[in-house]
Each structure stands twice: as C-alpha cells, then as structure tokens.
Image 1 (cartoon, rainbow over the protein chains, first blue to last red):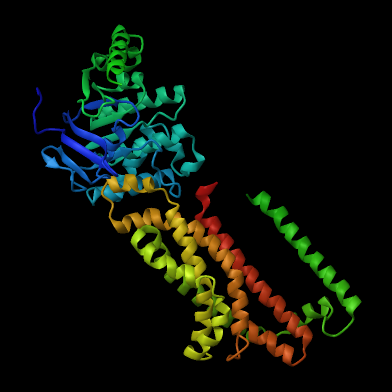
Image 2 (cartoon, each protein chain N blue to C red; image 1 turned 60 degrees about the vertical axis):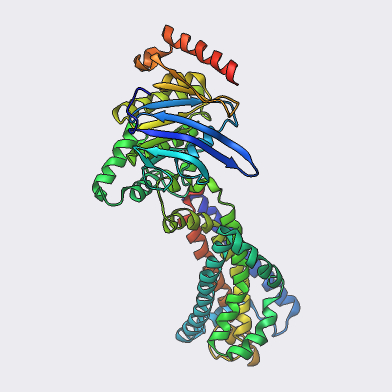
Length: 258
Length: 249
C-alpha cells in the first residue's frame, strides 16, 4: 500500500453474517485514504449496502475491523458519519430546515451556536439550490429535491466519513446529472472521506477518484481501479477519450467478475 | 384551504337545519310532551342559568380530559414499549388480546365497588374504555414505522431519547390522533353513563335530573348542549390534526 496506513478508512477482513450462516460479506479488505472519494459498483447482493451499514454502525454483528484514523468504528460515535440512503432518509414530519437542524443538533454536541447553525443550514441549502424550499415538508418535494436535502444534510453535519448508497438511482437522467455536478462541486470544496455506492458505471467514473468493483463471488477481493477521468474538469468528462476507455475497462472487469 | 372550509361549514349548517326540520315534523306528528317543539327547546336553552351550566359542563370536561390524558399516558407508554420491543410485545400481546374483547362498560359495577361512586371511578371508567384502543393502535403505528427511518439518526449517534422524540413519537402521532377521534365518541357515552350516579354535577346528571323532573324541554336542551360539547371536542381533535399533520399534504 502506497498511502499512509493509519490515515483514512480501513477495513480489515470484514465478515458480516446475515441470519443462518448466509454471509453478506466475507473477509473483505479495503482502504480509503482520508479526504478521498471512492465509488463502488457491484452486482446486487454483493454486500455493498451491508458494507455501508457496517461502517455506519447500523450493523454491529461483524467480525474483522473497521477503523478510521486508527480508531475502531465499532463503538458508535467514534467518527461522525454522513449517511445518504437510497430512500433519502428524511423524516416526513419535519420541514427541510428542521430535518437538517435536527441532524446538526444531534451530531454537533454544542460546538456551534444556534446562530452559526442557522447560517450553515442556509448556506448548504443555497449550495444545493433549494434555499426556497426550507419550510416545505419532504412529501411535497420531488425525488430530486428530496435528494438535495439529504445531501445538504450530510454535508451540513461536517462528517468525517460520508456514505452514499445509490443516492441518485431513483432520479431521472437530467436531474441526476445536475445533482452529480452539485454534489461533486461541494465535495471538492469539502473533501470528506467518501464511499459512494452506485450501480451506474458512468456515475462511478464521473465521481470516483478510484473505482471499486465488487465481484459476485464473495471470496474474491474487490478490484480497485485507478480513475484518470477524475482529474478532468467535470463538464468535459463525458466527452473525453479517457471516459470511453475507462467505461470499456470497467465493463470488462464486470464481465469477468460478475 | 380557507375556500374549501366555507362550503364545508355551509353543508354542516344545512344538515343541522335539516335535522331540526325533521325534529319539528316529528313533533307535529307525535304531538306529545315527550317530544317538545325544537323552538321551545332552544328557548329553554337560552333561559338556562349560565353559571350552573358552566359548572356542569366544566365537570364533564374535566372528567373526559382526565380520563383521556390518563389513557394517553398509559396507552402511549405501553403501546410504544410493545411496538419497539419484540420481547415486551410477546409478554403483553396475550394480555391485550384477552382483555380487549371484554366490554369495559360491564366493569362499571366492579370499578364502583373498588373506587366508590366519586370522581375516581368515573375517570377510571373513561380511561379503561380508551386504554386498549390506544395501546393497540399506538403499537401498530409504531411498528409501521420502517426500521430504516432510524438509520440516519443512528449513524450520527442519536441516543434513545432523541430517536423517540424525533421518530417514534411523531411517527405514532397520526394514529394517536385518529384513535382519539374514534374513541372520543365512546368516551362521551361512557361519561354520560357514569354521571347518572353519585354526583350532582355534569351534563349526564343535568339531563337525567331534568328527565326525573319531567321537564322535557330542559332535558332536550341538556342533550343539545351535551352534543355541542362533544362537537367542540371533535373540532379540537381536528385542529390538533391540522396543526401536527401538515406534513401529510
């Protein structure tokens, strides 16, 4: 391993068992350097979601180790985690504003004053282009708007790790591209250690510094692919030769491993 | 919103007038003192001693509120416990299952034997009637909250109290409100029942007293007032629903 061993997210021989001997993950190893963003694609049932849930502390019964900056994440609250689930994970009975405020209050433990928090909320909603929706309830918003709120919330708590579980898969193509752009812009200004699970090859290439391809056979290790496309400015990515080359390359890996 | 409410009010008013017309027709057909002219009833309503009525209404409202609040506190705690903990659900489910079909009103003599004829037994009866419905609906309401609703809060390290406050309680609130709406009718009926003994205050007493004195127009006036109180209680549940269930629309 070329990068520093103790900085970032480190997963060592992680095995998660679902009921009756069925393994969701087997002896998995993965390293994410601090302030990097990795995208992960894999066939359904390969354990992507389980991995995120284990990192987030939502699955506790695993063997192996999950560490962030050398500290075990087994105890909840060791590292602050910004989770963006596929279903957005917004509480329907709270307005956009109070959804974010609640998350900030729970995670913040008094570091910021109320005024600072309010300012943060406003600036994140503005960054996501939804400042005018602050007092609306999630059920009155479109999927894309809800997803923006969920991302604003994840950024607003200033997490140490960000986990996204196929966040844009339910959105139509145009909305998805818009949100991908907004997400990446904000990530670049706040580079949180991020694991981004997707089932979309293009999305994996557009958003990841490296791309983790999960094999369908759980005994095989995940394939980690360098992604030169990440260096290209976002609007030029899709038209670049690297993008096509990378797509081909990943499809080939997928054909072999799935 | 406002625009929709106005035709709604007009419809209600029409129904109310219609009912009075039917009442008036029945009065003409039956032509006995046991069914007085609605106009006489309203006239006697106006002649009632306001202060006395206020005391009767106040007593009735106090009993309903005390019963509802007690039932809510107990029912919420037990219902949420059963909804959140499979172990407690296993223990308590047979208890609820066995006791639910018992007609609680039949326990009235038992409650009277144990707690006397005073306020305690009246409030307890109202609570008993409501309690089981609240337990069951709160439990089901809490169970219906998908597990992943808690995910984001768990991942940022929310404790039990925070999860309860931000997810469980608001998630169960809609079922709680609809249960209160349904059981309020029952509660008012039971209130009437408990107010015909061991008290000299309350709407139930007022109606039965007028009945004994064969003052039928006052009796009907009492019934009308009692209904009005029920209607106002209903409206306040509507208001609460409007206030707390905004997110649904």
